[in-house]
Image (cartoon, rainbow, N blue to C red; front, side):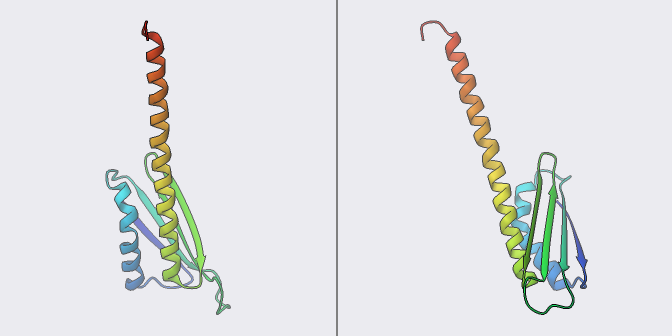
Length: 122
């Protein structure tokens, strides 16, 4: 997976970059088979004149051959925003995987019922 990090209104430090890489490792495990997967991460400070409140935003957009996942979170702390966006991504990726699996199972069950209907005596 190709990870690109963009920052807005503050500099990207090596500590933040390493933290993002560590946190995205769990998401990266779902896309290891596809080398064309692109992950765009934008970390931003939404305002420069506020000192309290949700002023840090983390956005992640993952594009793979059959998956398009987007998550955006605003929090008081940059590290908390990164953790929250990772949790949202994991939830979306897992639900998409389960949705595909259940669709295949339902389709297989329908095909089985169709085939059973064609056999005489059953």
